[in-house]
Length: 202
Length: 93
Length: 253
Image (cartoon, rainbow over all chains, first blue to last red):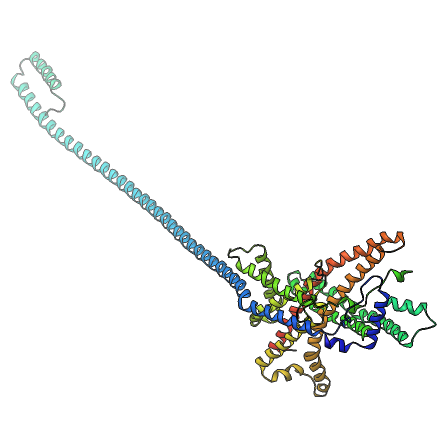
């Protein structure tokens, strides 16, 4: 206050006095002189510095760290949550890849098995066809041989029988040639015998 | 100020020379402040206009433009404020 | 005549607050103490909140702190400036509360409209950026900051005094005057229209009374505007402090 009052000029004082004179009806005359509006007042400077110093000290010591710590804690928490989520996501991706790989393996495996089975079946079918062909050929060959053998045997027997028959016939013709009636009967009899004899002849 | 001028006008015959000087001082202070406000007025207009152009051209960097705009306004405005302070000084010292 | 109605008090009367306590404790001192108290109250309320998601006060405080981090420090000083976060936050809240009392009923005076408060804060900033510059660059801080690189020798005689003046004298002065004059101008505007309203209401001419609605409306509008100015000036003081600190940390013209 002393500083400001010292700096007040005579003109200023005159203005204040003028104002006091003009304003007697409405306002109370100022008990102390009006301070200069520009110059800082010492007491206000003092009070301002004291309160600001107290503010700075308390903020630095207690209040700001409280808030900063809370904010830092939240930042850390969010970051750790994000990291965790990222980790989980990567794990899930790993598992998914593993599953997909296994699925692909299984599909390949089944394809391979089906292919093998198809090949095996093919092989089997071809084998069976081939073997059936061979058997058929064998059967045919054997039946042809059988037939040939039977034919040979029949032919042989037939030859023998024909010879015997011819001999018999000749004997009979020679032995009983006197009687025509008798020869005819004999031939008839012979034919009957031939007919009665079974085809295979034994 | 109005009081002084009114008093000076009503009692033109018996005015002390100091009062005339005070009245002239008040007039000078008023004109001075008015003159001091012209330049910063134009300057702030230019600053804000260009800042708006910048923001419209690059909306993604509007935050930087806004901060810089306020800084520019603060620097420009200081001139007007010094004029204001001089006005008070002229009137009170 | 109007002279009976319009008795505008001198500006000196508008900022005169009689002391009512020890050591010249007046309204300005009370507002300073209140600003300190409310800032600390906000921070303790915000710090008490142990929940993960901040609510109410905590949200407000933390968004301001985040704004000062992202919008002020990182843009002007970079990561190096994070150690000034607590100071800039305190500064912002202190100035804001000093300013906002301009529009709070029954106080209606910004402590920053007295030169003492802005001058104090500007002096702190001034000392801070000089000390930071000297600590970071040694004595070459002074020569570096007054001599921009790449200036021809002949111009140095012109540049060095200008730079010396602008860096070490005009800076704190303009910083203080900016805040002081903004708040005083706002206060004067409010007072002017309030006085005008009162004078018109108390006018002896009856049909002048309803006209009082015009300055009253203006007063209300200016009150809203001053709330904005209170925040803006706190922000500008804070960011300019950060800019000056940054210019001491990285001397580049």
